View 1: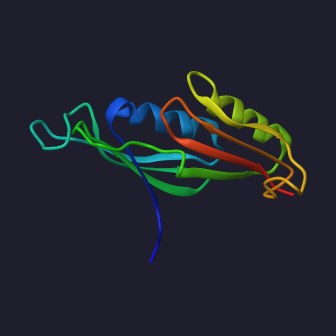
View 2: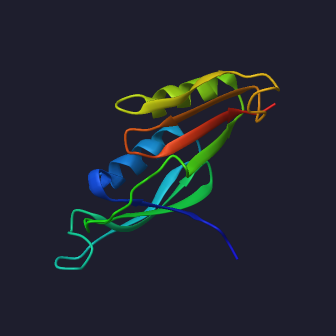
Length: 141
């Protein structure tokens, strides 16, 4: 059995999936868009300009995604986030700035935290990007 994260872009985020994936693969090393399949004309769930199914990797880890123009009662939530361990202070600061910028929001400022705080690593921050995805960034020991 294998567990893979699946992102579904709906509501305000519908129509932004391809741009989001292009953004993510541009800022993370060893990242690629593996495939994108759009809806066929008249196919339920979307239109030909929307992604029916796609696969991408971020630093070698596979993710899948889609978007739907149905009136869903849910969307992305910070309760589920992508957690990234970073190897350097330069890397974590650059990623945090890119992910939280351009309409994103900072949920926990990137800062040096001691062992009495979150305890994940030397530096930690939590943000939501402009596409509604939440990210926890952690500088490992």
